[in-house]
Image (cartoon, rainbow, N blue to C red; front, side):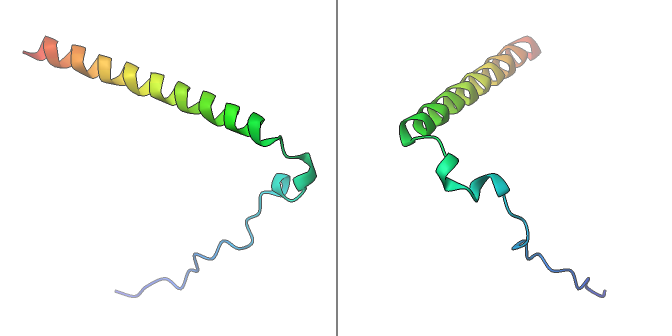
Length: 60
């Protein structure tokens, strides 16, 4: 089987919004946003877990 000669180099992919570091939010704002995102993700996982547990109880 012959392999493709594709390159996985992604050096050309740039997030242009990060190039201007003067416009970045302050660290406390970044930390708050990260915390809020993590809390939302945790709530989603808890909901999924509860749904799976409920489904398992119905199956038995």
